[in-house]
Image (cartoon, rainbow over all chains, first blue to last red; front, side, top):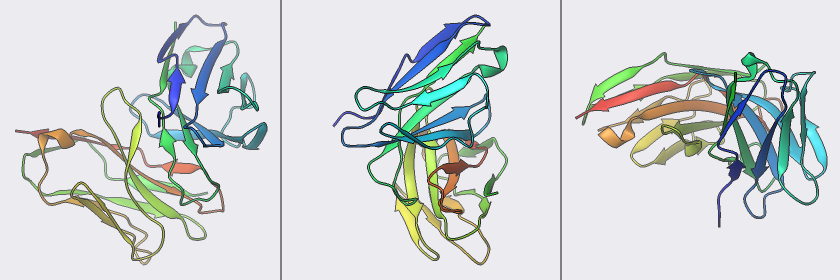
Length: 115
Length: 113
């Protein structure tokens, strides 16, 4: 069973460009979470999605950031008009069931660098 | 809101030393508690978890006990190895019925041979 897959692993963008980060959850998992890790910091929750629904976006910046998890295909985290402060590692995690004691399985992350 | 506070790093130990990384939390309700480990350039891997008070999570020689009275979940290992060098994150979920993980700031551990 393949783990959580994220691509690209590394992404370089210039200020003002768009960044699209993709996450394919583990097979059979219908819950996806996105987290952001700034250098030398812990992970901060951004958004929680189930298939076709955003369940909790309380950690998502109000502007320029959006996320989706369509019925078919990977979950996408989209950052429009990137700024230097968006440089970070973005991790996706998936879980099979709802419930706070269910383990979240993490992908390897996408490291975004904004020039 | 919910929060997790971890022992400041970095921590450097010699091989076979005893390890403790302190973790305390603030949460409403009855959260589940986790320790995750991150090796260089990789994502996070679950190391152990505990879902209710007095539960002990254990894996690969690491242990942590869910202490409700002191709101703590300290990570311990009796004899560390060079391969244990990594960043360790304490986390909780479900404190306010939420599914998201709330992480501490991480503790970088280096083990010297």
